[in-house]
Amino acid sequence: MSDPQTDIEAPPATLPLDAWHRDLGARMVPFAGYEMPIQYAGEHGGIVAEHNWTRTHAGLFDVSHMGQLYVSGEGAEAALEAVLPIDLSTMTVGQVRYSLLLDENGGVLDDLMVTRWGTGFYLVVNGATKWDDIATLREHLPDEVSLNHLEDSALLALQGPEAATALARVTEGDFSALTFMRGGEFAIDGVPAWISRSGYTGEDGFEISVPAAEVARVASLLLDQPEVQPIGLGARDSLRLEAGLPLYGHDLSPETSPIEAGLVFGINKRRRADTGGGFPGCERIRREIAEGTGRKLVGLALEGRLPAREGADVYSGDIKVGTVTSGGFSPTLGYPIAMAYVDAASAAQGSDLTCEVRGKHLPARVVPLPFVPHNYHRKGA
Amino acid sequence: MARYFTEEHEWIEVDGDTATVGITDHAQEQLGDIVFVEVPEAGKELTKGGEAAVVESVKAASDVYAPIAGTVIEGNAALEGDPELVNTSPEADGWFFKMTIADKGELDGLMDAEGYKSFCDSL
Image (cartoon, rainbow over all chains, first blue to last red; front, side):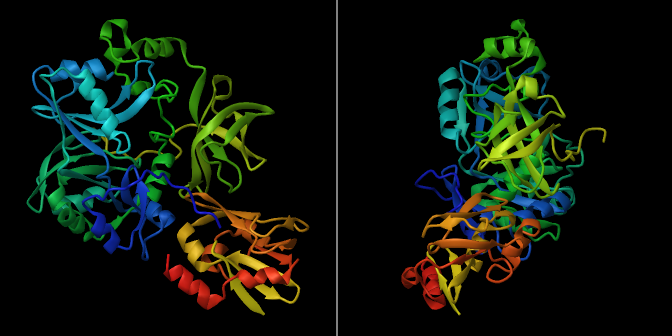
């Protein structure tokens, strides 16, 4: 039997919760330059069990591999707008927004979350790209704007319909006013925590930034709550795929534009206009918004049980029309799903296509994203 | 009947001139939840160490290799509708295929149960 392939970058470093994961029987794999848990042992362990637990209760994820950055100083707001297609003027303190770091051709260097803090901006970027991101940002930001890498902070995510119940029990401070994509300062067992209502599963949930020195205590306290089980990278990937959320390095890369990826919302309204100020790649982005793109990222629902994975070719009849960038078996739906870039002519919902896997053509229909409805705690809901 | 094991985590049970092949409990545990198994069709010629079947877990696709050379007699049809058998009964009902044995000498290099256990413990 061959070994399943995982993302390998040697030599892997360890994260603050390394021993904590191993004590829980986690199987550790190299990911984004770190040793990380792919799944846990025990009654509730395993990718499908962890996936289903998160959809029905609350799952605790260690995402400390991600880069936490802080941008501040004179002119930080204008400087960030010159490098990101974001409209910071419409963001109040504590508001979180999705954004994109683009190259000069409009290709995606990374996707990230930007939060307005009282004194500056808090950015969360992908683990595998954080060092390049820091270099890119530093290159674009003027000297008087500081860029701090918050390396002493760890990051947890608590996701699922019971996440709020579990978190409320251990948090000092009332976060009932926190709606989706808002954050605030709280404390957990005396540990200062920046908590935002956001995540990567499609469920209601929170991302919790705490000092690395205290993260094991916070994680254990959360895990003591009856709603909570630990969740590894395996279920993180199947959850985000069901939620139709792109994964950098797979669905997004310098070879893809955010407009092809359906991420036009990541180009904030004011920035779409020629008068909205420049940002890297703005000419291509504005042209694609106006004229459309030759290919589009779509969702595919497959017949049968055989998954089409990244790299599988997509056909319309005998003609190759695209390539799968993420694919797997959906535990929630009970059939395989995939995201693929396909020619615009084949991208309409309901289009009947096929995915080629080991010489077989698997029937695949274009379906709306997300595959599984989001369950966010939105304002007014 | 004698059961042998490979370093690729297949087991092979020999019964006279034929053998049954599957993946070990250790292998299914490493793979996690199995969602699809592609077994070879009867009549397919297998070479020792060649690709014989594919097992898809939620995580990834993995090849299953033929421990010895021979001809496929039967693939386990039950795995088509019930691939989880590989998780629940990897070394019995979750077998992959039955095959003829082209050269019994090829069994000599394989491990017995005790040898395989030591091999897994050393991983």
